[in-house]
Image (tube, rainbow, N blue to C red):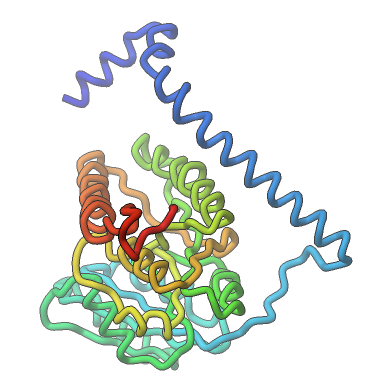
Length: 310
């Protein structure tokens, strides 16, 4: 089937391809172009205002809360070592909790071998698979750190990622901060390239824009940080699809601000299989239907207490 589609596309003339893509060019492109321009103007205004006040434009890391980095995964033995190497030692007040959610590929052994050579690492192995929410709640019960940072076990962090993502928590009203997710393998094939473009243009600009407006509706599941007090207030992660978006909306309904840290960068593996990509997107869309259109439908109902304008 894919060969037929590729053959059909490659045999079209340029004017036919433009006509085919016209809905995207006319509707989607202006939307992201507008967001990009508005974010750029906002940033320039903030920089000019900071210069006028005599403030330094260089990043300062004044806020240093205690942090627990939670790495939860299933059958991620092949990538876990790189994740732990990227996290360990990049922040002073930090502990690491690795949760093996019933893996069968020796993921917990990789974590224990790393823990034997490095201090401050706790390894939890669950005998049966319980899902990501269950694994994260298990780690939450094991720590007293002020900030919980969740990192996917197939991702690596930039050297300043933890410092960047904890700075917004200096404001006590901030309950969660989303990091920036960037593709590690954008040039594997067309599928990975399209995802890399989506992460950098669509998702990045969208979260920058909505964060500035105070209407950010999701913290990245691959790299996000939460105030432990806020997590305990909403009783942690609920079991079910789209746990990252569901938790974000529950925190917003509890009165917390949700922000985006553009320079807190996480590099993740992009899918190179079209079949796996389509399954992932189907799972994502089903999750949105579950927690936005069903569980949190009151946020769109003017006559409900949970109503929000965004």
